[in-house]
Image 1 (tube, rainbow, N blue to C red):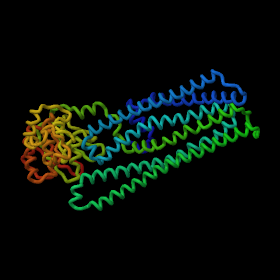
Image 2 (image 1 turned 60 degrees about the horizontal axis):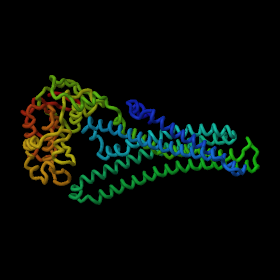
Image 3 (image 1 turned 45 degrees about the vertical axis):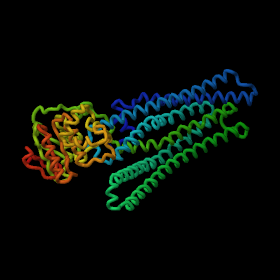
Image 4 (image 1 turned 90 degrees about the vertical axis):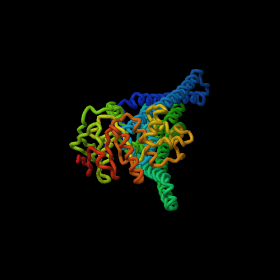
Length: 539
């Protein structure tokens, strides 16, 4: 993403060009809200006419006047309701589309994407930043247009009645958006800092929750409590700065709009009393209508100021979401999710990722190969597997469906059956067979509901059992190629040896790429790849 690209330009190129958030919906909402204001100006004219007849001419308003005013007010109410209904529907649809795109990126990127940030960071993107874009599109952007069109329409009417008052309002009008921009820039900066502080606090809190047993072991509760309090105080300070800037924005807008309308009211009042004789003559009809219409020049600008925090939130979302809400080409997504399950022949790998973190010039992999991937920590071994799996943007991905087993297996807060059946359906007999192969059947039979037992905080599941359950899920997949990213990294030596032998035994004719810092027998592997500073070579 181009850092200098404006929010509107980024939205058009990244989101709108792929058929999401069509311009017709935006213009429909603008039309509804602008029409409501035009009808309201007409209602003010009728009301001022009725008051002039009643007060000055001492005659009762006609039935036509009452009907006209009632129809105008009813139409204002209907237009407002329809605008609200369409706005809610548009925001819901846009949010659904953005969530769908984000979910596709998560499905393709998987471990490579999630591992870049904390869990809380991704939750914040989903719960805060995606809705911020929808709100900005159909609240702030609509109000932007309405805040320009309404003063223009109102000024045309004001000039036809009294050019002097219209000219004075036209001169004072630019002050409001000027201060809005000045204050808004500060609000955007504070909003970005607030999100960073919120993410840090959330990540710190969730991390410490996971480490409660370790904190109890080392009696570190007091020090961690002080750290959390400091992070919380920092967040509170940034929250108050955001609120303070927003309050300043509304106060500035209210001050200038109130002063401008008050001056108009004073001028009209003294003119009607005969104290002033400047400009066109005024009667109660014209004076009351001018007094009712003048605030509309500022009311929509004030409403835009109230929505200005949405622009700041959306700009923060733009910086954080980046390409995670861009459309994934159908062929890319389908190939990542449903690659053919057999090699057509040896895969000749010439790999180069987009960021230049991992590359390989001459590598060959054949069906049934067992390949050991070695290298120092941080050399790029995990990036290599993620790139080959299509989870990481690179110039090459393996031409088949792959399954990955990492050092931290994903165990969902669901039943044993659902964990094994994830995105698949298998018979109970098949599930028991695969559990027996990974030597977990006795443990599952001892659970309260066996296959239907929910895997939450209880029953407790060890690291070795979690890896065996993840291995069973690999066996149930039809992927001919397994990517093993240190699956025994957190297991004791004895469990490492047992699980490694089990993986090799169960892999059978599968093709393996195995990353491990722990020793494995040389005769298990047909090839060895070494990763050094992101460069992969065959040994």
